[in-house]
Image (cartoon, rainbow, N blue to C red; front, side):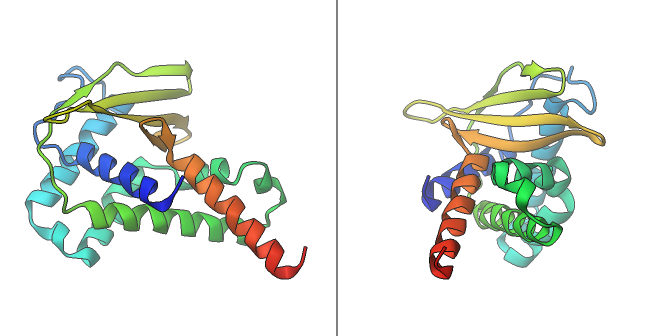
Length: 194
């Protein structure tokens, strides 16, 4: 998956979080559940964008780090992206990979915050593979054309439900980062003559 595909995924995430007329799952979402967390995040980002502060890149990044990163588990996302290589990485390499993934994700999201859109969104009942992982799907309804499907993958961490992956049109952010990690590792090995 190319960099432009990751940018498209993050634009679509921004569209969901910045939709003013979205009220996911009605008013019956229980506090702390993935649907309620998604609704809370949408509300926070919508308010921030309406304040006009999103146009300032520095303020946008500070806001994302303070208010939005708690919805994600970047450590868990990094472990998924590293795949089997995670077991062979030392703590410093793990921390560096997590910092790079987090920075890349938030930078792209921050750059797209100003693309505010008032598209309507249809939300679907969460589905899960187990009691500890669920996917919350949403369709961004396009004025002309097919809706764009987004899947937010949540897992039950020790501190509550966290997002660890986002898919747009079936393309996963975690898979993108895994490919990027493998490509970087391959390049490093070739440069060192391994």
